[in-house]
Length: 81
Image (tube, rainbow, N blue to C red; front, top):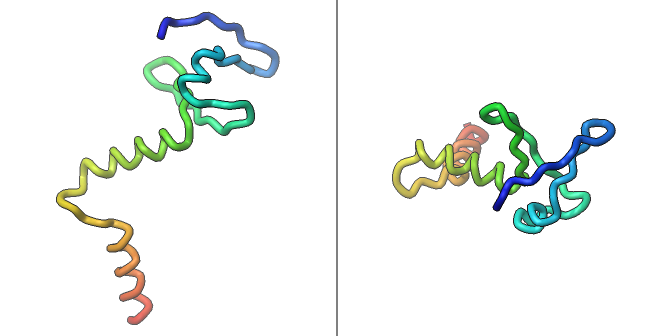
């Protein structure tokens, strides 16, 4: 998608062009996450943030491990003490 120019409004507000919002699935009132990346601003959804975090963790997990199940089992063992 081609770059588009927009202006910063009062209070630092920036309008995301409608075509971009449509592609990203953003609707009025949605929560978004902003991050500084490589001298620019990146805007993404909380779901995208979760997917990125999961992908980062997956790099360190080998095989077919279920970390949630392992954590629950650990907590149960701790309480049985």
